[in-house]
Length: 302
Image 1 (cartoon, rainbow, N blue to C red):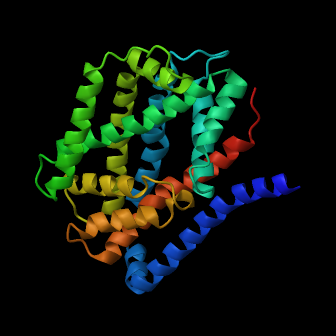
Image 2 (cartoon, rainbow, N blue to C red):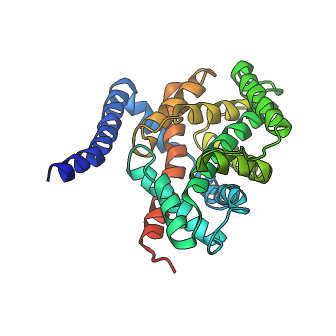
């Protein structure tokens, strides 16, 4: 009885902490933001660009993110190869659980389902998830570095991100990537991913995904009447990704908005339009992925 109670506490406490933190963030935001100005900003929003952003997210961005993951699984041993639609289902299911539960709870479903239903080794799947996070960071850094060459934003953080991304690519290109003799299963799987150069194809799809997300930022800014050049788009994307680097609240509610508002206000944009953008941009990601993810979770595996 005590063991089951302790297990329940371990499962419940992170969720409770996440939702509590989300509630605190929302209360503090409501006290500091001019809600009347924010409401007026949202009422003036143009919803045609939002609809285009939603379409872009559900098509180009989603396909690129699934293909990015698929590239890392191509050479992995398996009982039955996972199809694109298998991975699409798991992608939406994991995103939905991450949106509803704290601490990136949805990441586990990708490992469990692919191991149980398709026979992929768990260690290699976890290594692929870790590699995917690194590839996301490199891709974002490269795009920020490229846009730092254009005028229109604080270039220092963009140049720093670009330098780190380019340095990471150079290091990966120079490393041999051969499996280490005597390494554990996890480290061996990570080395195997590098040896197969599957990260190169995955990085290509990551660049497509980040460019699509950059377009989402531009469309949502346009919807709120914010005129900003491409380097500001990149700064917003960098600020959002930095803010959600560590899992905190379910769906990163409040945290993502804080990163976006900080990036925009640092470029001289007023707080109300910046907050309106953050809400719309987050909704474009959060609402459809959660709805489709809950549907994906409910469907049986064959």
